[in-house]
Image 1 (tube, rainbow, N blue to C red):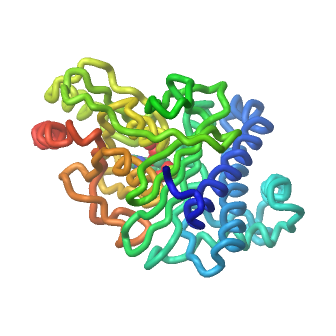
Image 2 (tube, helix red, strand yellow):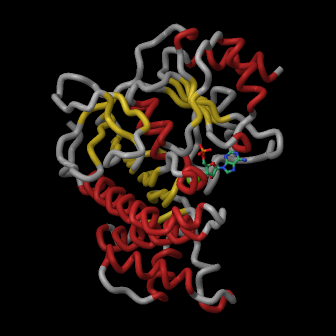
Image 3 (cartoon, rainbow, N blue to C red):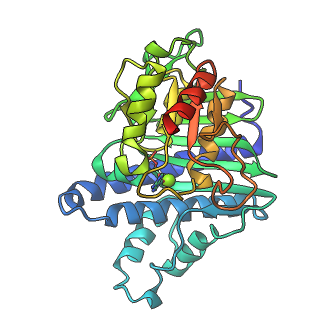
Length: 343
Ligand code: AMP
Ligand code: MG
């Protein structure tokens, strides 16, 4: 069992859980009306509120620690020229979770996330998969502790994943699958301690996750971004043909893909470079938690050339291109197929 008495592990479970519940609240109160207008305000409110909450919780628990997070409060602040209504909404939601707080303090909490990613720091994506959040699909709250480039603890809140089968008897290693109506899942991993999952609404019993034992490419399931602009669809097709996949790729937003892969719900995860953005560099908060989770469940993760991910070079994975993640057994075959499909 993972050591829930460890302060960093306990903090990660608590912070991810509270932030995910807050984001769910924003979604249930704001998304349906806004969706029809294709308005991004709910995701903005939820992003900022979750980041403010985690920053505040971190300041209470580990006041010396650095936070490296996706958002900043620049566009929220009164002097930015807006009417202040977004900041008002963010403040209302944060106050529900953290007790009454004023708007300027909320901005200060959010801006704690601008720390440099050096030494020991926490990487936060308050909502990973913003497009999935707006579409009513997968999204995740992602938090990881990185020390000198090594991910030590990783947590994901996945409101739209569920255990499959739906039992927690300690004998079976359950996999995770999409479920838009269930309570959701929190996944936690720590270096050397495996990957574990529990229910978002009733944390208590944890089930250990492990990757699929499938070593036959023709039976493998490939996970890819839902958004075609985040990958290269033609190259995925070519790759799939070369390695011999029979099933259609599964489209899914966010690091929920890593949770599914770590639980044996798939064998391969590809993040190819979009032809429109060949110079795109992955953000550290999009992969830190998921990468540890997958490795601790027995999987493997590299970039598209087979290089390990390097978390020591700033807010992006500047030394890596794209991502290949797998159940380990199919990693070499996938790298080989990638080499051929790229040439
Ligand atoms: P996913 O849902 O797996 O597609 O991942 C969502 C993440 O993709 C977001 O958090 C963004 O940081 C990231 N992203 C945005 N643009 C791109 C791009 N052109 N290529 C790859 N990832 C991107
Ligand atoms: Mg993200």
